[in-house]
Length: 113
Length: 114
Image (cartoon, each protein chain N blue to C red):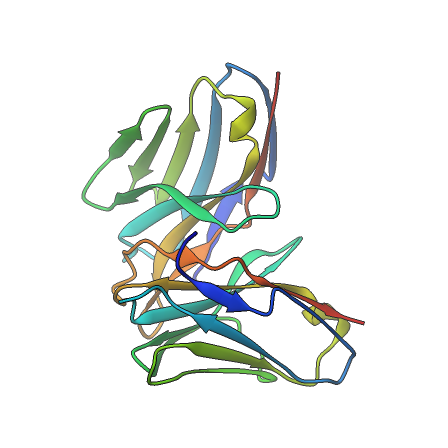
């Protein structure tokens, strides 16, 4: 079926380094690609999203890039801080008799100071 | 606070039993989504309702069912429970159903099947 692959599953960086998380999707009709952050014991929350008519979007230290031809998109976090430590999920809108967001399996990011 | 309310927060039950999880969406949101979160499977999409009608179906088992009521709250029914059904069940809501909208998640129901 339609799915979203996410890599890596875990990522450890030093404070101040950059972190990159990559996702690929299978549905060529997907047109919406959000990223959610889930802190320990909390609900997932949207941090940034991108639509298919845009190649890159930035919001302060985070950015997302989209390559529709290759069907992959990435999250970039610069100048990482300990509070960036969390699980990050990518997602893509998938046609399934309607539309729903299908999530990747998540990346656990650990930022050490 | 996302505005999405889920009850109960925790549920402990035995194998073979049936439970009901409840979700009230944000005011004005017509779509409700159910997701299952387990340690190794991330956020698995179960089912979506829009304004009372089933809109999309994911990896939902036949033992599971859901509905959305006229007041837009939704219930997820899990029956003949197995140990493997233990997970965190999230409800999320959005305004419409175009698949390109921000989802607001509730705080989840932690289900433990013993």
